[in-house]
Image (cartoon, rainbow, N blue to C red):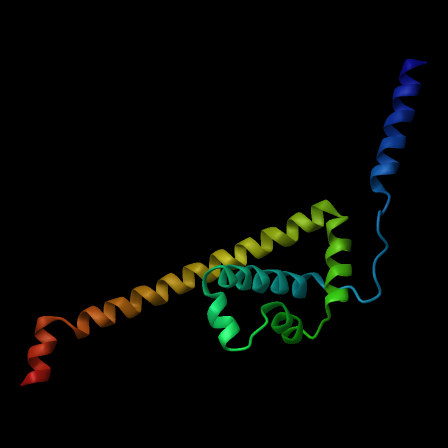
Length: 134
């Protein structure tokens, strides 16, 4: 009898966990586009922390800029974010993709910086100065 009660409780637990908390919105942002939006928002939030004055001086509202770039509105973003957040495994997958994209972009920027630094070092080396002066 105890086996049956345990089995029934386990089945009920599984069924209740599979229940969707939030219905899929009609205007759901696709996952790949959502990843790009979240990545850009992470970059913009970092920029706001360091260069908020420059953004204001140029009349740029970062969140509005992102919504216009991806042709979405704030309600669509909130609905989509809430829906994905109600599916923890998918939400985690989205953020892992965002993290991977940010890491890849960081590596590309660092590689470009190394090339630029190397060129500047070569340009400013004593041999090149002599060649330019002669």
